[in-house]
Image 1 (cartoon, each protein chain N blue to C red):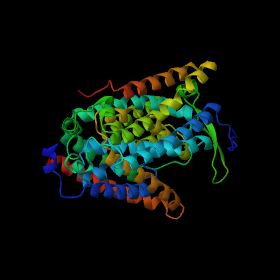
Image 2: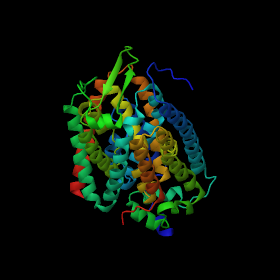
Image 3: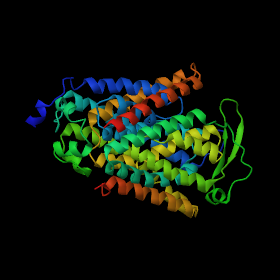
Length: 288
Length: 137
């Protein structure tokens, strides 16, 4: 490809991948222990500040979110913080709509995708800033869909030894929201922890720790949209590999920092980063 | 298999967790080995590393058009270096589908038809997505 050789950028080929590795590492330190997952910070930050096309950033964002969730999955399942039975219905719905989202993302003009991503990220930041979390929501009675599907269980909080029986209500509205979440996650490569947790916790009534664990598991089994990106040629090894490895190493360190840094501080930092990256992405989309 | 949690966790969840753990370890080894091979120059590359900065600002469609048109499983026609990593990623994306294949028979034995249907449908969606037949254009 001689024509391409002449068009090579002045920076060495390894410069931006190396920067990406460090950026993913830092995002992993901050994002994973703060409970938002990797993809939701990765896509707007890297999309706004790196020279990669948004197609590659969205594809990598999905992989980053999936890899982190998969790595944590076995432990969460064994400890009872993730519930396989509870995760399967939303995972099915999100898998279907995530494919639709990925297809829509490739079909829309890049400018619209950038604007949509900017608006979505700003909305997520606002949602995070305004929403509360309930450690153990009050669910007076499981609804009939939850009973029919056998959703419910017991877990023991390792921190205080408390045994909690949990039930599920508002099953149908919850599953409907997973359709929307899957679509947005597939379209923008965001993963979905930012929305799964509030829906499971605040709407469907799961204890916060079960919501966090099950959310990660839903992401890990919803790999359908990532296949669409892979088949569209949107995964460049030199971008994917440093991002996934950097994020996972950062998450390992972040999990240790969680015991010395208050979670609320990390959460505030994440919200500020989302506002900056979302605003920049929106302006970039408008300017293009 | 031991269950250290004082709460009863379903057998299928524990089996799924064990399988997932093994499959993920294999995925990480594949990805790390693939990256080492990709960067070391030991394997041939369809797109030389030095040319990537001129290409990664293009859309995926333009990138594919400029680098030989590898859509779907066509990435297997790329260089061995690219296949080493993209093959590892394809495996990573397949991990949960492979593990999920143990679930329908378990639920069927219990006559838990809701979950037989849900797991079969989920496997079907993932297999169709993996096949590459779904494309934007």
